[in-house]
Image (cartoon, rainbow over all chains, first blue to last red; front, side, top):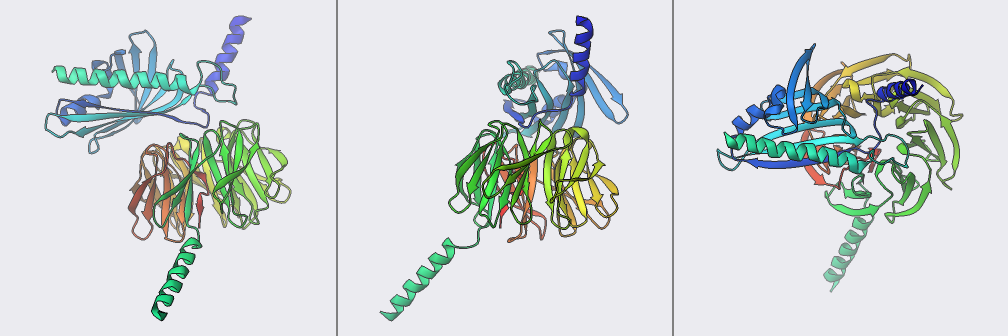
Length: 173
Length: 312
């Protein structure tokens, strides 16, 4: 009986996979990297090799579905994250993607990274911006772990650790 | 002595005219700081920031009644702003999450979409009492009033539909399926326009024959409005707007905006388009003569302004 109930709830929740509440949240951070912009962009735009620089990612597997590119990230924690590539702009040095499915406490996570040239040839800036919503979609009271603060903390951690890892990897070479 | 007297009169007249010059202001709801910014569209100055309820989103302006209503999604109430004094004169507790707001032509009624309870509130604009609640489709979001037919039109986000209600009886006239996750909606003359956020498209509905047309635009379009012979669409995740020619219903141009543009309205006095940019906490002002960006004004944290936000 319990197993059946669990399945029912999972099914119910999965239909709301792409619904969200009325208040989007934002995380936006930048890092200065001592490496030329085109070298940084080459690494950032490589959608299928994020494990090369993001410390939380163990392995990346890409697949194409029609015109679209998706990637499955296997995290060092063992969990998986499924993401869709939404745009690669070489002129703007901008990579856009969305999280389709993940164990994170947020939904509708859309994100982009922009590389810009720094003040010298060996310097560039990477800015990572994410927009997302808390897990809980209905009227308050909001259950613990499904609120804005939890969503924001999780997104912040992904962005902060990612930018740190990107800087470390690029400056090491 | 006489010249001095004339100068004083001219000065006084000038001062008088400036103080009473017709308002040309944008009222921008800043969801990240719980305020509404009043921005003078002639001088680009932020004249005042009014504290409203928690997480304000939607707005509608009743010009003749000199009030504006703002929906606060987290405190679940409406703030009534007196547009002469620019202060909140009343807060209406709803016990519901208000999304979109609009009003009828004679400004006697205000309509508010109740996001989670799938209904519309009909509110008396004189005493602010809730006249009735009408059950509608799932998660009703955008709402607009069509003056030609006296229709209230809504987009039901999670049922992918647009519903059309008559003003007099609030009777469901028609339900039309559109694209995925319709959000912003507008209507004038014989048409309804809605943005299908997850389909990267807009739907045009013809009110004379109920036929629909879908037009591809950019990434995550949030709203669409018609100005003269063109449609303007905010592509929220592309940081630009699409311009569509209504004679051919094809996209003809894209104009860059600030980050995450969401809503847009026309400054009729100056013939400009004003866009709220959630991501850059600003508004973009575009000259409609040449489609060039004139100015970006910092308006407040997470500016959204979902509704008719300009007082001309």
